[in-house]
Image 1 (tube, one colour):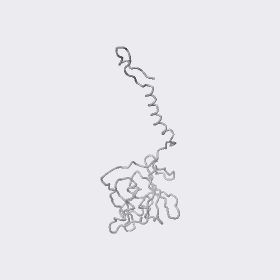
Image 2: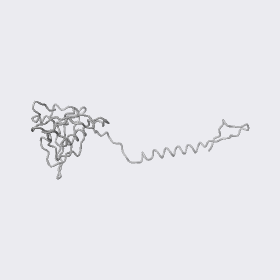
Image 3: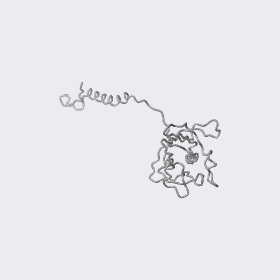
Image 4: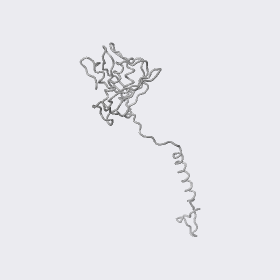
Amino acid sequence: MTRRDPGRHGPTGRGTAVRPVGAARRVVAALLAAVTLPMAGCGVAATGVIDSGPAPVVNSTPTLVGIYLVRNGRLWPMTVAVPSPQARDIVTALFDAERRVPDGVTTMLSGLTPTQIQLLRNVPDPQRHNDPDGVTSLRLRLSISGWKISRMALAQITCTARLRPEIWAVEIVHVTPESAGPARTHTCREFWDLAPKNGRLPP
């Protein structure tokens, strides 16, 4: 079906131009169908929000953060440069620190590798009355591969993470070539006996 354009009638009243209205409507309908059908038929359901911690920060200038190494059988604070203050970059720097430790300082993380690093909302432990609520605090979950994790290594990891005030606890899963152990949750308070002389550790 076509419609005459009344604005272009000549002296005789005959239409001099026509517009294919029906055809245009069919073209628009086809385009809409082409867009909406793949979305409706892809079979992908909407997913809930997955908590992955704070958003990454793009920063061309390195950030200085604190980590804990070992000196004279105690934890020793050290400042290192990282690409960003995100937990993943801090943990990576801690495990790589053995390449740049000063004289007299060492690390107990040699032979250990973090295979998974996650930030989760903290679930308060009812038996620990000073736990904060899960809205304002985070839990760092690490899967670590290697044959053995010493208490000093656990202290290095946990107390380094606790330097971030929003990280309340550290959950560690030890994965050996033979099996994966249970997840164990730690806070730095467990390792206060390893504090530097005349120094203090995070809670």
